[in-house]
Length: 273
Ligand code: GTP
Ligand code: MG
Image (cartoon, rainbow, N blue to C red; front, side, top):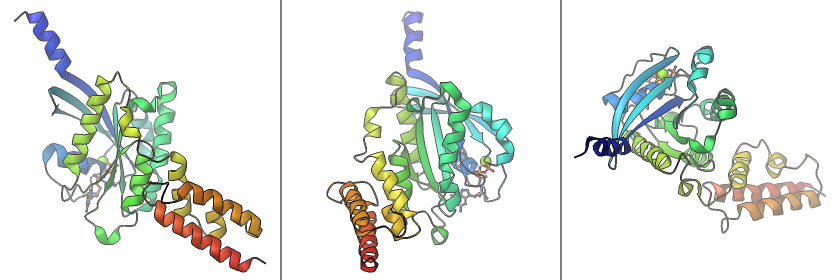
C-alpha cells in the first residue's frame, strides 16, 4: 500500500487526549486511576504532591487512544502547582467521597477553579465530565445518596458512576464510558454529543430539588420569608408543584421533593391564621 495512504489511515485511527482528575484531597482520585491502570488498590494514603502524570493506551471501536492522565493533588496547598494543568483537557474525572458531604459540596468549587484557570479558553461544552461517587464499599458511613449525586451530575450533562477503587466496582465501566464519549466528541468536531446532555429534565428542576433537600425549615423549603401569609405560601407552593409534579418531572428525587413540599405547605398553613 502507498505509505502516505497508510499513514493517513493510521492517523485517523489514533488519537491523543488529555484528561485530568479533580476533587478534594483523599477522596480517592489516585486510587481510581491506579485501579484502572494497574489493577490494584493501595489502602495507605499517599497524598499526591502537586501532579502525577501517566500515559495509557486504550482501544475505542477502531481507534487507539493515547491518554495522558494528569492526576491532580486535591489539597489547597498545591493550587499553585496544579493551576497550569487545566488547559487543553478533553476530559475531567470529578471525584467525591460518598461518606464526606463536604467533598460533594466542593464539586462546584472545583468547576469554578477550572473555569477560572482556563480563562477565556473555557469552553465547558468541549470537555467530557464524569462524576465518580467513590468509596461506595464503605456503606455504613455513606451520607450522599445516589439520587443526589446523579442529579448533580446529569443536570449538568455529566456522566455519573458509583465507584470503589477498593473493590473495583464501576471503575472499568466508568473509564469505558468516559473514553468512548471523548472519542465521540473528537469525531463530532470537538462538541460534546447532544444525546448526552438531554437527560429529560431541566437544570431548574435539578437545582430546585437540591435546594429543597438542603433547606433548613418549611419556610426555607417553599422559598418564602418566615411569617409569610397564606397567600404567599400557596403561591410558592403552586409554583413548585408545577415544576416538580411526578407526572411532569423525571429528575431523580423529584417524588421525594414533591412530597416534602406538600408536607411543608400543610404544616405552615396549620399555623397561619
Ligand atoms: P490527594 O492526592 O491528596 O488529592 O488524594 P486522592 O484523592 O488522590 O486520594 P487517594 O487516591 O490517595 O486515596 C485516599 C485514601 O482513600 C487512601 O487511603 C485510599 O486507600 C482510600 N481510598 C481510595 N478509594 C477508596 C475506595 O473506593 N474505598 C475505600 N474504602 N478507600 C478508598
Ligand atoms: Mg492523589
